[in-house]
Each structure stands twice: as structure tokens, then as C-alpha cells.
Image (cartoon, rainbow, N blue to C red; front, side, top):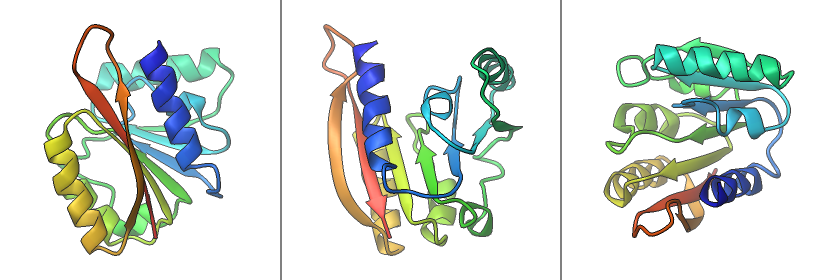
Length: 158
């Protein structure tokens, strides 16, 4: 739980000055969506995961807008992303090249990016920076005790 709590803390820190609704892309079971204040849209390709997220939100008394959406086949467009005050992104190991390309063309002011793969993170960060974002900080988070594996949490800002 320490690693998860650290990642949630990093995402909250990244979004501290954001205003408006937040989108959680690749939301999984809702680790971030359920921990964020305000209006949250959560997109996830896994049907069971999105159903579990909806059930978790109901148990927590949270009103989230959830969408069963494969962001690899149908990424949120630049225009869709631009409607949000912030985006949280936690893609699988392969990263999110198509979704990142759409984000790079958006006007969303704040992106909190969580990654389990430094290589795909570096590729995606390069796309965002070439699209006009600044990488303000990146921090490693030891996710699993007794393992050398580390997650990365980063803040990109326009």
C-alpha cells in the first residue's frame, strides 16, 4: 500500500493547481479516479475493470463518469482532452503512443503521467515536450517491496 499511496500522493501533487474536471485515462480499477476530488471522467478498456470501478465508486458514494473505451484503438481526441483541466495517464508497459499524440495536440494545461516502463515513458515524454509541454518533475516510486521495480510519476504542464 505504501507504493500505491505514494503514487496517489504524487498525482494529487501534480494536480494541486488544476481546475475543472479531470480525466483518468487507462483508469484500471480506479486507483486515481477514486482518490481525486471533483468531477472525474474515467476511461478503461477492460470491461471487468470498468465494472469494478463503477461498483467502487458507488460504494464510496462517488459520482464518476466512466466509459468502457479502448484508448489504443480509439484514443481520446485532442478536442476531447482539451475539455479537461487535467489528465491523469497510467498506461500499460507499452506506453500510449497514439493517446500521447492526441494529448500533445490538446490544450489541457496539466498532465500527471504514471509509468511502469522508463523506455516507453521517455518516448511518450518526448512526444509531449515536442507538442509544447514542459516536464516539470519526475519522481521514482518503489512500488513493490523486495523488488528493484520502480514506477515513475511525472508532471507535464503547458
